[in-house]
Structures are given as C-alpha cells and as structure tokens.
Length: 548
Image (cartoon, helix red, strand yellow):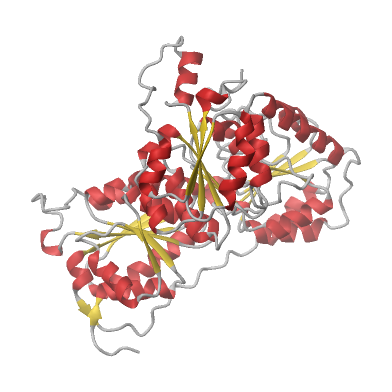
C-alpha cells in the first residue's frame, strides 16, 4: 500500500482498475490530463485515443455492450463535453452502463460566467439532460464517494450512462492513498415470488405462448432456452437479438412487425414481453396487434404498460424471473402440436418477403453470411441496408454479438465498431455503414489503424443520403433537396489512413470474393459496395414501417 500523498487523478485511475476496467476511451485535454497521466503512469489499462469526444463515448458504449460490463470514456469540459452529448443520448437510449469522466475548470472560477477557457454555462445541467445521472466533485474528500455512486447508478437496472465532472485543480490536488478503492457492491433484485406464481398460473393456460425479448433479456439466455424447450415461441426486438441463437427454429428473430408475423400473432393466445420498451419503430407506431393477454417483465418499475397495456406486470431481473417461471411451468404446459410448425412457416414467409425487396443485395446478404465467422460481431450504422436487412437478416448467435445505433443517430457505426473490436477478444468485427454516415466521423479511421482494430468496414456507397431520397420520393413529390453528397474516392481514403486492405464491389459477382478476402485480412479493412453500379434495391426503403 502506498503511504505518500498522490494526485487525485491517479486515484481515479486506480479506482477504475478496482472496477475491473481494462480499456478506456477518450480525447486528452488540459482539463483531464491529471487523470490520464495517472492512467499512463500506472500502465495497467489500455487507453484508446479517439479523434472526437462523441467517438470516445460511442466506442465505450459499444465496448460495454459487447463485454457486458461498464464502459469508460474521458472528455474535456465545455465544448468537449458538449461534443459527447449525442453519443450520451445513444447510450441512454440503449441502456448502456457507461461512466463518462469529464474535466471542469478550476473551482475558484467555476460557474462565474467569465468565459474562462473551456467554460460552459451550467455544464452539469447539460450532462444531467443526456445522462441517467450526473455528479460534480468539489474536493478530494468527495471524490471516491461520487465515483462509487456513479458506477453503482450506471450498473443498476435500468442501466445507463452517468457523467462525473472533476475540476482540474481537484484532479491535481494531493490526497492520501485510500484504504479501500473497491466500488460499491451491486444490489441483487429480489424475485417477486408471488408475482411469478400469479404469472405462471395464467400462462399455464396458454397453448400458443410467445416471449417477446428486448435488450433487458440479454442475460437470460439459459432461462429463455428452458422456456423454449417447454414450448414457448420467441420473437425479439432488434436490441434483444441473439438471446436465443437466431439459427434456432423456435425463434422468429427480429421479424417482429412483418405482416406474416402479425398474422401469426393473431393465432397466439399469450405474449410475455421481457425487458423491452416495444419501441414505435418496431411496432408500427404502437399499432402492431400483439397477442392477448399480454404480460410484462421489466427491471424498471416505470415501464409497466408504458407502450401496451399489460394484464400483469412483474418487476425484477429478467434471468431470475424467467428461471423461476420455467421452474413453475415445467411439465404443466399443453402446447398446441401445430404451434412450432406454424412459427417456422411464419419465419420462412417473413424472410422471403424481406429478401424479395433486396434485389441484387440478396446476394450480398448470402455472401456476408457465408464469410462471417460464427462468433463475429455485427455493428450497424443507420443506413438503408441496415434498416432493410442488417437489423434482422444476418443471423446472430449470441445476445452480445450485435451493436447498432438504437437511437437512430447517423454516423456512429465506425466508432461503435472500434469499441466493439476492442472488446471482441480476437473475434472479427464487421461494421455496416453508408457513405454519408461514414463521412460524419471518417477521422476515426485513424483511431482504428492506430489501435490495430480487427474490423471490416462495409461501406454502402450511393453518393448521398439514400433513405432521405426515398422519403422525398414517397412523401415530398420526388423533390430532392440537400441529400446529394460529394463523396471521396474511398480507395484513396483507405490507403491514406493506412487500412490493411480495400476491395470495391461493382457487381453481384464481386461480393463473395471481396468479403472472403477481407474477412481473412487482419486489422482494419474496407469493402465498398458501389450501389450506383450494382443497382437499386427492388423495394425502396422510406423510413420505419407504418400502418397503411
């Protein structure tokens, strides 16, 4: 144990180590340097140099999603913290446990509105607006308490990003080495035994029951498999994909709002929604007709009947509740013998309907599925290809193998891909992005190269905002404004940044050889799909589906 006084910034680094953090992301600044100096001197965790504050937070977000733990990002104060706001909104939307550590100007000048360098008026209020919670550390005496509580709040369901601002003079101040650096123990949510019993008593009557799984069910794979073995059918939100491997014939995957699936819902006699907000873009703006009666399990007590009325709500941890539910239902269900065959037929119809709209990109899906390792990580930006097939058609085998921009923000895919690659443990990461979204954060390619991220960047290039053009066709009489973009030669971009390889696809025949070669090449590589050469989708995508 150290006995001499040390800078508080060094204690921050040691606390993160005590939390099990081995990788952090950020942009260095004069107002966070004492903390980063502590990380550098201790040399016990990897620090990834992002090229933007939003990039750092997106990387930490994806890292947390893939690893299943806490992500950590550092930004500067003022403008730097403001740059991170959009990425914080994404993490908040996704329920990602993330610790955002930002500097602050010196305490004597704080909140005096003197235009001090990096000063932002009421920065803490801004951070509270985009975080689950936000803290300000006023002194070394309150440092560890704030950090411990911030980590506790971030990891307590419903999880989310938490910001802590630490003035630079507090970071520099000397303090005694703490006797205890351990974070607070996370409380275990008790199982509502009476609630589970009542839920089981109702579900035991069902002959065609469905589970709808959201992101809150990602830790419940074992219990979900038990319920599937008992006869439950499975359908997921995009965030809940892979809780049951999508190769399993008992899951519909994320084809949750497809017309054949909605028709199938009408034949089901119960649905249990677990850890999902039943978001508008996945429920035809809440008009999707779900099976009745509908029941709900969620760790957030405020989620009860928020989107759809629930006959019964049980609050608690998804894995624990579903496990107890499986105990109570074992050997008691009388499942319709045609149920699983009907589910499989419905899935085939939903897949066929999706593929019919892809045109030549049906071949891209096949080539990517064949080349993708079974344990690969699938990261998607907001682009036409993701909205049409990326969010549901490429199979996921694990609940933490998929990352996407849940909040709908464009341009986050590359950053998330870097964070995912840092967490992947040697597994290949594939990032799907459009040319427009990629250019918002193209500078993070330098980060990917510097960190030797093992990722394949699949760029769908139509030289503009394709989905915007489709919406303009569908809703604005074909008047196209502000959606055409000057797009660089991506081969030159890839070579300038020093990517390990580049392939361009100008026809369907190019897909398989390009993806196969790229997947075998270590480090960051790019495959560009020239949409103007390959041809259009058979069916234009003009925004999330709505009831017609």
